[in-house]
Image (cartoon, rainbow, N blue to C red; front, top):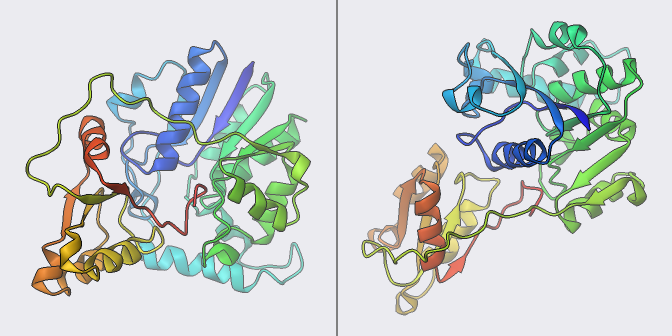
Length: 319
């Protein structure tokens, strides 16, 4: 098949969604499908408001498919100003279609000013259009317009997290609801995501539950890390409020010392999470271990040695 794939970001240095999308795209290329991928040059989430590099990474340049990498300009006022515009969109969502003066803000998440012209120049010789990520929706909106213009089926992997407290303003605005309604198929990663999409009015027969996939463990079992405690709960990914890191930290830090269970955080730690850890008592802090970003080999070593995996996320499709 000839596929046009549009996604806000792609690569191994971003979040799990971007790594998942890259794995899917690489599998499709290996299976012999002809791919055209349009994405940004973002290397971390902060690039969505700080601005991204003009050129893709060396990793991206080596991908075995045709790809276009668009820069994101810095947003005046940074993250706070960008997210204020998203809230304005949500607060004015009740206005009739076409009458919302803030509707142009939809193109800011993320802002890819070169995207419309790029898609306008792409020959419509595709069998379908596939878009990722409903919460950073400007590429999806552009992909949907391209599919509509050329009468191509649109498939969306939304990475929806219906349990999130921010779902109303981050995932359920008019334009996002219309995106979901316009798709020929929606691909859900978990039964909870499918149930959530159904609760938003999407017919269940239009949603395919495809699962999350997995990366096989290395053939050789990793030896435990002698620098870590013998019993630890493992949290993998960005330690942020929405991913349940506060709950994980509080659960471990309030356990009786006799349990000897520690918490290991593998991934970037947000500033408010770091401040929360710093505010614990010395005895509680001693049971929390922050490792920062780790390699794939290190991740497998940590998983092999963990007593339990702990990720009480409220903001992921798998949650």
